[in-house]
Length: 391
Ligand code: PMP
Image 1 (cartoon, protein in one colour):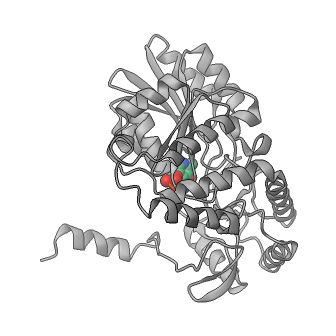
Image 2 (cartoon, rainbow, N blue to C red):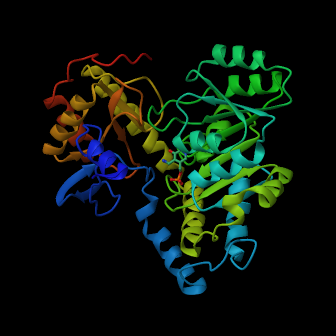
């Protein structure tokens, strides 16, 4: 007789939504995927720093100096001088007092949200927040109130409903990972002050990408937020997560955040790579400029051709198809044109909003961009508007 794992596994195997692993050589603009050469327009290595020779060199030097692993948690034997250095530089970059590193952005959200909330807290969370925020909310003992995506009227109504509640947190992605749109931090900042709530922003896709010299979404909107969560794994070209906030909040997290306390400190190579990545972001702003220009160009070109692409400014460009199978078929057609852009389907995105998620890199050449544009030109927009997605 089949046990429940076998049964559920078989259900997944036969589902059109089954996820498959691809084999990729590395996250460069041209790479090999499942044995075939492709132009890659799907990486979070936005500035090309994960494969930058200077970043690689710093990682190598750190391994030689400190070894491959940090050997303990930060509170035991893992606290190397470069951890503190990176925290100091990230805090300065984000214009905050202090910073704390985590092993990943996912765990940074887990650590922050679970430690800053308790059973007396209400968390107001955007409906399209990243999975790590959703899971962190579930892990927290707080009451969770979901507001409609970027809908400030809905949020206001919900905040009013709980106006007298003492502990309130609003949490949002700064740049939404599957839609590439921005959270309206100007309005969120106003509401958080009016209703005396704490504002947490996950800037995973904004750091290095928007704001002055890539400082992120709060900088872009010229507002202050209470807590910024970030990752080292995207524009910074490394791996790991971080949280920036005032000194007291960071000290509180050192005492309370379980993913910080009980996890081995970030590997020296990752820290050194991120330090170099951060340096390059600040000294070579032309990378960010090119990334944003390429994003705008692709958005405009695809829209002109009749593709369903929302307005926006980020290099995350969703091409909305609607039906999951049609999205996969379109991915296949792009694949035949030697371009890799993955279809994103439920449950990652809501039903009927399956899409191709195109992301650009500052290191894409004009020729790469032409290749992408011509492929979309050759292929027609599939049954326009089959999705029920509204922008
Ligand atoms: N937040 C957002 C919005 C993300 O897109 C991601 C990664 N996809 C994370 C957090 C998690 O970051 P990391 O990969 O460093 O765990």
